[in-house]
Image (cartoon, rainbow, N blue to C red; front, side, top):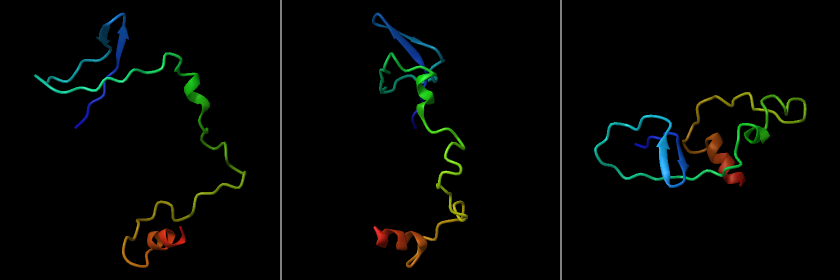
Length: 81
């Protein structure tokens, strides 16, 4: 299982913003984020409802369970590709 926590790296020092899990020893992966990423830059995605009335539609059976058997809707979609 992976656990992600926020930290700040500055001048060779890693300072945790959150408490790490109580583990004696573990491998870790450190990701360095771009410094120009901010909350304002992250709002560039599609806003909820922004495609309404523009020809995009969610099928009425979107939340229906998938039938993964032979001749299922998903199987037909694969054949169409």
